[in-house]
Length: 74
Image (spheres, rainbow, N blue to C red):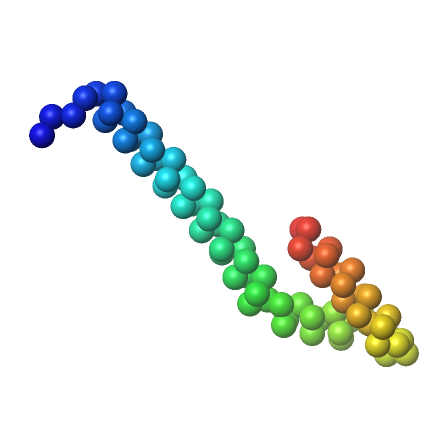
């Protein structure tokens, strides 16, 4: 079947755009899954190495929150 050259170019560009969008979404999912997998390892490391034993639970929660923000921004 014959299609116009303009339409063919439009289809090719749209296909490339959709593939690029899919690639960006997959990259985000991969990063999200890595954070999810490493969360337990990270919190255990914080507990063992960063949090003093003589603090209150509220102070401990603040340290976890601050360190988590630091981790997510790297």
